[in-house]
Image 1 (cartoon, rainbow, N blue to C red):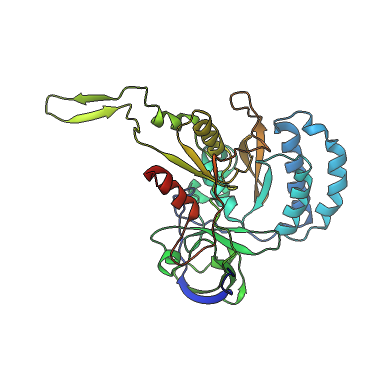
Image 2: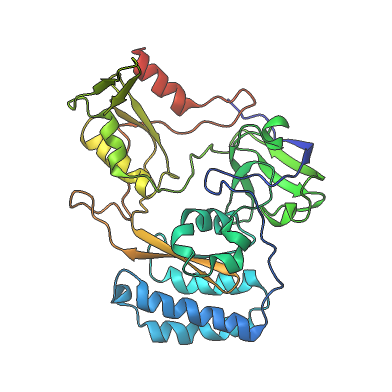
Length: 350
């Protein structure tokens, strides 16, 4: 069966300061102009030193780190924009072949999302300088998106109650343009809060609906499904009742895919190992190192600072295979989701 040809849609949306669950407080910090050559080299040098002093492997995976610096420094000196400088820095970091190790600019949603996640640590590292009052947020219409290596931006999630949801955007839509210019997740809505923005979309049948998202989950979350532990009920003298140690005592399934990463992979590992239910979808990303963040120059460095073994096993670069492999289907207006449908069928016994 052939997929229907792509249909291009133009939707008029109202831009707003939309906070995601990763950055719940609403405020966008204006960023300054692109740094000069000296500032750019200073940022490069600070990233290099931070990795040297804080990367989880003191041997830097066998790399000659001073030689790596010398190899990339000329490119850093030639960089004329934040984006060009970030490309040089990330080329340097890629040699470490480690997850949770990347430099993000203020034009990327990840910059704001990670600033929100690591706000506690960043308060000691200049959070207030980047975000007045330490309040992290960014402008948008309520979507999560991911750009591929060709620069195409695909919607991976739509937040309920936002202009994007009201306009009918769905996961899998490719955003072609914003007000006639190439789409940028942050820049396209900068200085347009409360104003209409015209988006050009391409909706085709062959775009995967990925379940992306940061980690941050704790293994203790699995305790909810430990039915061997008792649940206690308390009743006070006024008859008010409360519960402690509440457990989920019905069948449960877990959905994963290539965007399931970090702490969520630890949950998937435990869920599968202890047979709490079926793990449905595709293999997880294999990005399981402990990281922290540093605000450096006009960007943010996410750096792996600790190795992680789970029950003595390494998930970094390996991931967790599902117990039931189900590929994500093509996006549709009806919101069909084969992975979710399979989970419902498993739980209902059909």
